[in-house]
Image 1 (cartoon, rainbow over the protein chains, first blue to last red):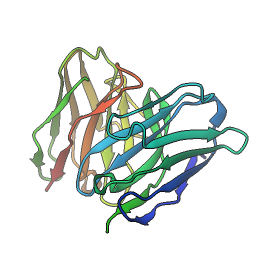
Image 2: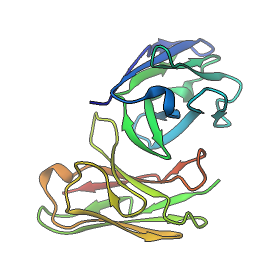
Image 3: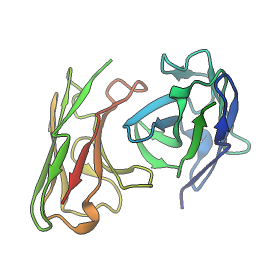
Image 4: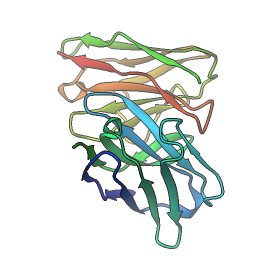
Length: 116
Length: 107
């Protein structure tokens, strides 16, 4: 049974930092690319960061490039998202997503709220 | 960036009726198109990939069609559990996938 379990969300002030984690099980994590996808309150879906199965290639949307860092530890089957210089507009549910070109498995999400 | 446009924004249909969703791409995405269902408070769930292939466990009342720039998701006979928001996604430009803005299916 495939499971993706995110953690690390919370309330942070503008300019602050958070580190999200996603522990996965039920599939060969080290063989799969992964994404972080976010959804602002009442809004649609937007991928934020992508990482290749071996971590050698990463991609970010423009609005987070230089502020967010995606990484992975294949020995721990864990995906990370380091978020710095957070802005109010980063407020969203962040989902850890397994890539198969399309997104076949999603975590339950973790809420990040950026507010003063 | 490939822009995905869904219509209508809201679809009002009665249980037992057919629901049809549209998704248009700003340029050809071939058949690299997926559909997702999202219920309130839940993560999205994959319904269709490859424009017309149902994901594991998805009922046969869900079907997808189209290629190039025009795509359709059809629910043949609506059940109460089908009322949700539906998103299309292109992955032809992988890994720079893009989503449509969603269509809300309501009673």
